[in-house]
Image 1 (tube, protein in one colour):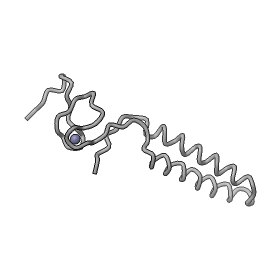
Image 2: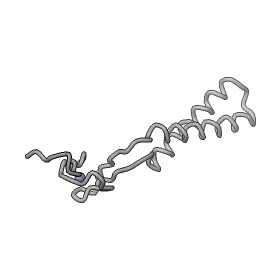
Image 3: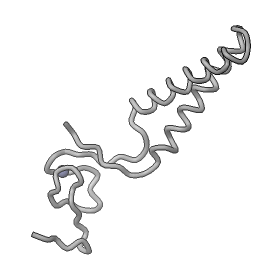
Image 4: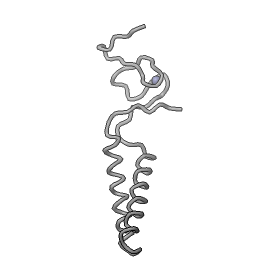
Length: 95
Ligand SMILES: [Zn+2]
């Protein structure tokens, strides 16, 4: 069966049932429309930035107070990167 797409309905990307285009979540499978990164993605990218900055800075300069500053900078960069990386609407399938 083919549903018209011009009448405010769309297919849920998760369960493929018909839902409203303005729906924030799927009434059938509880999939959630999401803008921006999830909490675990924020944490993951921030941690990656921190570790990467710590590793790179420890290769470039002898271990000191500055490595902590570089690590903090990396954490910030990782967090900002996550905001850009996931700055579109996505559907998160529950399961
Ligand atoms: Zn669904």
